[in-house]
Image 1: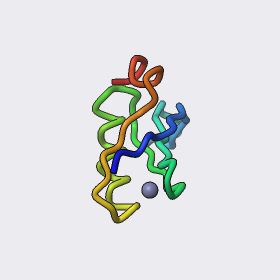
Image 2 (image 1 turned 90 degrees about the vertical axis):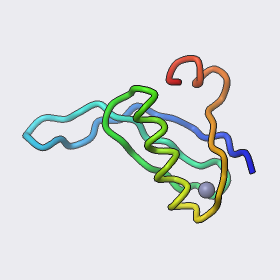
Image 3 (image 1 turned 60 degrees about the vertical axis):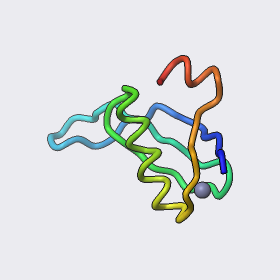
Image 4 (image 1 turned 135 degrees about the vertical axis):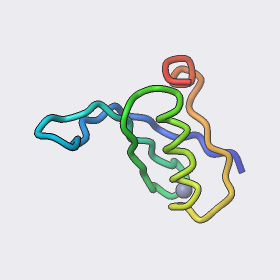
Length: 72
Ligand SMILES: [Zn+2]
């Protein structure tokens, strides 16, 4: 099924002592969330792939139209 996810920009711990910008994508169906470094379309898609495993379902993930415009 198609699941619209919520996206947030977050600070993630990088390899060094500094934080790295990232995104956190939350499944609106079960509440699972996944994070990835960066805020590019590739980062968002990475979260979708991870979410598919976290949810344990073959969902098709998407963002709201507004977030799609900003991130994908
Ligand atoms: Zn889910």
